[in-house]
Length: 120
View 1 (cartoon, rainbow, N blue to C red):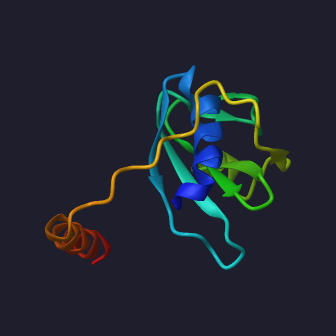
View 2: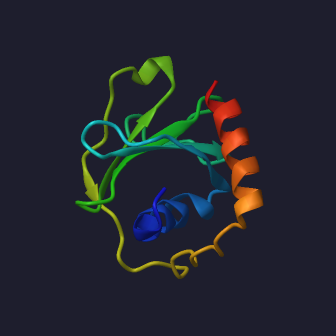
C-alpha cells in the first residue's frame, strides 16, 4: 500500500489488534481505488452475526481516499453480506508506520523478481 495511506492501514490494525488479528494480505486496488485487507489470526468478528466466526476469516474493503471501510467475510452463511460503511479512525492508537528506507538498487531487482514470482 502506498506510504500516503499508512494511516488507513494503521486504522485497520488498531481495529483488529486487540483481538489477536493481523493483516495477512493487502490486495491491489480495484477500479474504484479500494483495497481489500485479508485478516488472519483470532480476529473473525462478523457484523452480520455479531460475533466471531469459528473458522472463517473476515476482510475489510478500505477506501483510503475517502477514509472509509466496510467488513465482509468468507463464511458461506454470510455470502453477499457487507457491513455499513464506516469512517476510518483518525484517533490512532499507534502512530502511522514510518517510511521505510529506500532499497539499494541491487536489492530492488531481487525484490521485483520475488514479486513477479508471487504474482505468477
